[in-house]
Image (cartoon, rainbow, N blue to C red; front, side):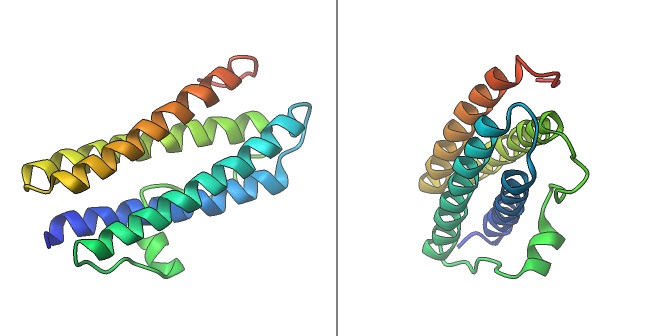
Length: 151
């Protein structure tokens, strides 16, 4: 077990947990003319986040680490911010795009470090998550083109 890699995986786990909660918040609170589309999309995305966080926790366990599992730990370790400041559908969509970009960049860096540490399986695992995030970023950015969002 490489403690440095496990620590970084736990940061990513915290990010996915924050995203899961944030996407639920957006699903519940989105309003406006794009409600039907974004309400359904945010539900799809919180399910996507739930799958990602479960897979990540299982990867941490598989390499001999211990996944963090409390709300306090998630908040202490995340690189993201909680939801709450966003009040419009455009602000919510913009926040998700930005968060997905941050998470993708972090996963890429950790993948490179895992590869350098000789853990190509973890590197491949993380690259798979980056690929899924890049697809979501593309889809969300395409959605945002019709909205006043900095996509």
